Image 1 (spheres, protein in one colour):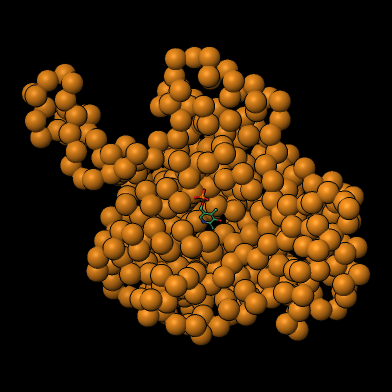
Image 2: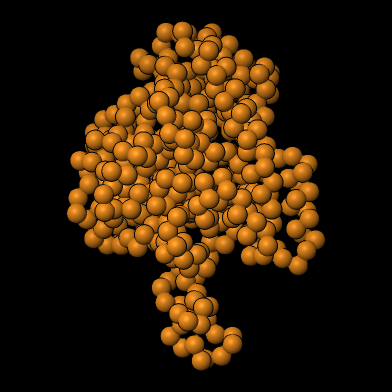
Length: 374
Ligand SMILES: *Cc1c(COP(=O)(O)O)cnc(C)c1O
């Protein structure tokens, strides 16, 4: 039997390995020069927007919401077509999560649904760049009004919308560097923000809320060793060892983006004439980075195709169950039927293998298996 093809996989080069090994030979394992270098590299890819490196995409969301200052009584409007962390990290701060439905074609937050979900209590509007296709950030900015605009860009580092790079449009943008994402630090993530105030709050929450700046301390005369906490935070510091991997992966990002686009084009060319499936839609103005290839399988045949492909050793995946279907939300009274477009999208979605080291012959194997099924 042919080798098992996962739906996503990291690409680690000898140069990546050397970059990590070099840091292990220095005195700094964490919070040293490699963190600054990685953050500077991320900022460059985000149109010059400053970055804060953290330990995961989930940590990035938790930090971003902390920087936004959300808490009990506040609402966060977001998409249910996402990994649960976009919503759960807001709930952990005590805010109420309000799900707005998605565009039935792209699975991205629907602008009018988001508008209808906004209230005077909405503190953050959180868009998700599903599959690596950027959300309609210009329209969502207008919908956000006084609320902060957050972009969960776990799928989309390297993408742009109307010529503007992801990371340069929202008040807070979050990235994930999990192995299947567009670049990896094993575990890792980042928050980018153009606001000096949000940046300082994000840096604080990443590091226990510790204040070292004497000018801001309540007891500055305590002694040279003194640091103090004004607001609770956590330890979400990404170590130098992993930041070195991230910096080298950033150098390789353009080649990853190019290869993902080639794979996307190869699938679309071979599958768009198959009755029973729909290939992904691209909105004018979007330059996606395809983290996922979200095929839509019609006529209730998604599960059968999933099982057929898994039987052939092809590691397809489903992204995502609507976030409010998780029992933790159901137990709080969120009901099925809340976002019908998202539920239909979920029922049809099948993510095909998509990662930079996937060879053309692997892509063709997936295509052949799908065509054989139909
Ligand atoms: C992966 C992912 C996250 C969480 O990132 P981790 O690094 O796995 O914690 C958040 N949001 C979305 C949309 C994701 O795909």
